[in-house]
Length: 170
Image (cartoon, rainbow, N blue to C red; front, side, top):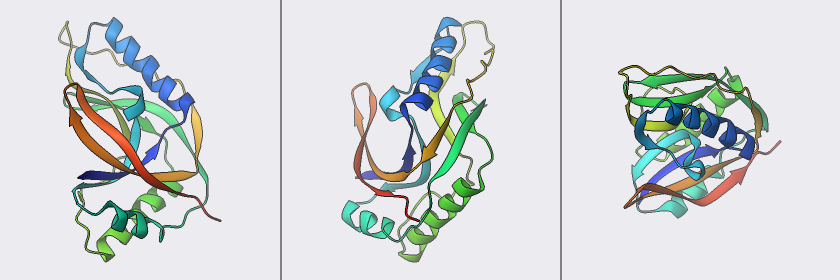
């Protein structure tokens, strides 16, 4: 099972990202656009792991209070385009806590440097050779839960399914 822990986005944030996707499409940019239901912020990519119940149990150790994140930028890593959130000490702390719990339990995860982002386009191919980044509508949401997600590959790309979640606790 291919697993990851993520912040799922509110409808308003998903819509703001979809507006950027539509603007890219109008520019004639081809690639694999992330479906609305797949838009998220990854906290830890676990990868192949056959015991989701163990991960859900470990997630119960994670404590955080509700906090706000705000979309504020568009960027890319080569041909992968993303929407970013503004600086959030609470998100950074949550990220560290998630990884700390996984590391203490010897659960393997991708240890890349954390750059909170929402991937909305992979394998971007601009028609003109250059992408004109769009502005993203600043939208905010309160993070009230984090989710364990299953990633399966279908004929049209990845399908993400929530296996469980934990809520913020005061």
